[in-house]
Length: 624
Image (spheres, rainbow, N blue to C red):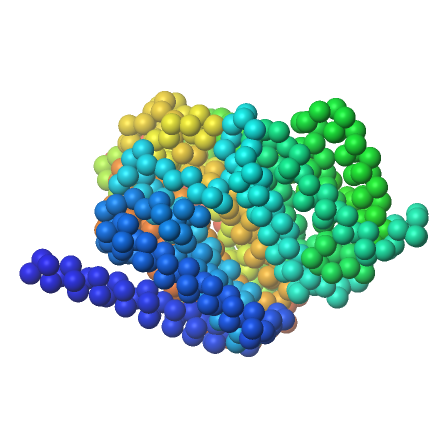
């Protein structure tokens, strides 16, 4: 009987991922084709080549798991042997790489704008979330001490000289990201006019597209000049962060991002100045003679780039800012980590008779105030009171949800995020009864929620909720030492290094918030905004939850309860992106109605999550 159940389980798993999942993605692209207004890319030869390459890679990887791993490519029924041969010698997770190429190839073949610009990127993010939030952790548990350094790995962070493989690998990734980023920007915004003026008009004879090719040669030479692996690794990581930042900026604000493209050249040879700066910085880790020579070459190439850029001022200014950001990523992380640890141990409370005021309530109160004020300003005063009612419904259901899932004698008044998501249903009914357009309220709430959640995560740090599990690396972990923190008095991890999961959430929500705000500014469909919000925040939550260490959270079939709810939320978000709704005319403006609604919502949230009655044993009376 057990063997029959195992066979049935494997068949159902295979059916889900071989048939249902791909067909579902096809339907997703089909039903959003008229909603995603982005340029389609159609090429049957290119699409066919990508699909064949991706499909072949998938089959090769599955074959390797069967032969070398003695099992099947199934997370629920993983192979018993750690595989380092075949495509797993080239890079990790080749099945996902193959599926991504296969999917992209099909949508390029079919000319589906929705498939290329929405379904494929979000599916790739989903696969990354699955790897970070489950597979990589599961592999470490099942195969402790086993590690496979693949051909296409980053250079090791060592002081020794890089070998030819390190140099070629770094060159491959940097040039690949460079070309891919330029291609995306060119296809999306290649025809946009300059934002802040014209190209640099100093030496007009250098206004030659052939000369911009020299910048690419400069980049190609760099990895072969570096003498240490750690320098090469830093060059590659900084380059990736810079290129990803430039594409992200271009997606948010195309009038800025498109200026990196030369006015006269093909996107293949476009090398933004920030990449030249990152490369020059790496050269200064070499000999003085090399640094001086490359400085002279760099100066010439910058002039060439500015003369051929669409906007010299914008190109230079943004490149300097992106350069400073990308080379300071380690310092930025350490600053954020140390700051989060200070906040985590900053608990303060004031008792007035039978009432206790806790400082972490001010964070969530300010977050609610800020969210309602900005949302009411963007939507207009007629939505102010509807936003208030909608938000209060979310807070109440968040409390009820957590009480059902996590409530205990020690945990009198917890709050759960997914209870707030459930509250959307009740809030929508209330808003509908008020005669207000429900989609406007839902969409503008989705736009502001990442910011509200990010501010609210500061409360999580102080309170000790949503905390991480143990981690050995002091460059990653933080310590909770305050006796009031739930980390110590519930989970028993006081003074130990744990993952700063609230900080992980804050960082992810920051980027999600920027992206959703740009969708609102571009007048994207309101159900689409809400759907994207659910998808992106749930993917982040899936990963974050894998590193959380709260003892009261149930684990079902190897995943935390909230990982399962995150999966459901993603599916709901996908459905929401297919919904169409009329976009009403809004009158955005600062108004007193939104101020009063924000003050009331902030006060209510502060009371709910920061004020309690410490001498009472009544249900919901105490926060700690």
